[in-house]
Amino acid sequence: MPATSGPGAQLIGSYLKTLLPRRSSLAMLGLGPTLPSGWVANDVHERDSGPAVAATAAPSVVGAGTCSYLTGEDLDLAGGLSVASATEPLNFGNAHAALTLHAYGPGDAAKSLAEVRQSVTSACAWFTALYPAGAVTVNVSATPVSGLGDEALLVSTAPQGPYLGQEDLLVRRGDLMLSLNADNSTGSLPDLSPVAAALVPGMG
Image (tube, rainbow, N blue to C red; front, side, top):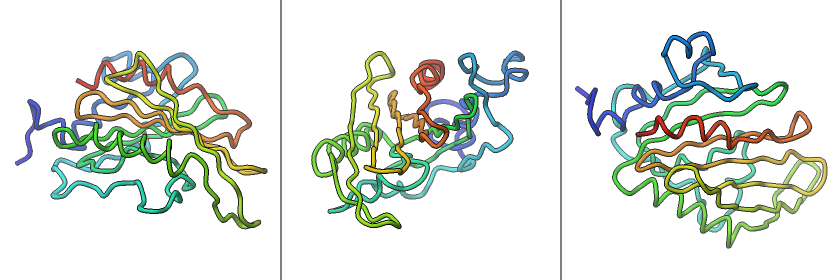
């Protein structure tokens, strides 16, 4: 049986699901954390990895010799080395975002974030990706964000031309990590930091 309380409980998806925000009507009943004004949790579509710890940690998201992991949809860079997760979509007006919480074995959350930081500030600071119209240069930035968790990093991708840009805000607290990602398909990228600030206190 998986742990249901204590440190071990934090390594299962069922526990992480309890840290996801709820619609305002449920949050007012104390059934989950609240979101900043204007943000709405789509908790009907929440998912989690279940009541067991993964037998093996997820592979690193950082590809050896490739930066293509930065051009996929729903940019979630926190998945590498995780053993459990819970996720749900969020809305801010017409803008959409995805929230995922990941749990890791001791020290692996910091290791996963360090791998991403190293990749996007060196080999993948800019790269060429193949889009339907041909080769496109993608510029990538990694900006430390102060005041969130133990460490936080905002990764932004900006393909040249009429292509979607994306952001992924990664916030680590202990052996848990929050990933908030969004794109500019509705015209602009929403500010993800107030959402992270509201959720990080619940991460242990």
